[in-house]
Length: 199
Image 1 (cartoon, one colour):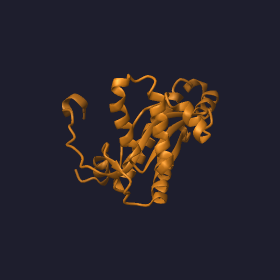
Image 2 (cartoon, one colour):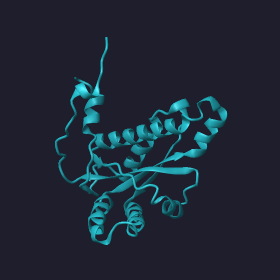
Image 3 (cartoon, rainbow, N blue to C red):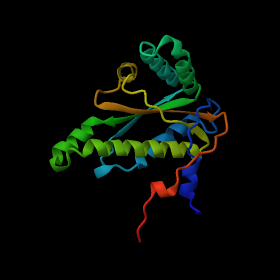
Image 4 (tube, rainbow, N blue to C red):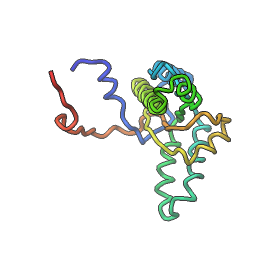
């Protein structure tokens, strides 16, 4: 299949060997993330996704907060492996924190009570689409990334450190940076187990 979109999706891979030698400037990365989130679709065009973009020392600070949150709950004899993993994320150039604005969801629930149960689900859909959009845009620019989930353990520390409002609910974290290692081969499940087609 000759599709530019599919070719871009194939570029989007999890990169755990991150560095700080970005192929584009910091401002360009910020603009790329903003545009990707802005163009991501959402139910009722509600736009519930929010992002905190951390560069350099601010990103390192976030991963230190994650360490602080995990240290009391990870067994001491296992913490070195956890710390090494977190250090690999901190070694990158930055981190995007993705949030849902729960006030947007509550407002839609009040306005459209018939669909009230669906709006939290649709907000998660919108956030996932925004994550994919950012990740793919970064990949096209030659920037590596992965998707992590240390919420809700670190939520309160993030609120205090960066003045995040209570209505922003943390959903995922995306460390990004230069690609410091090649990607391994990606395996796919059999189409017969994944798809059903009727014509």
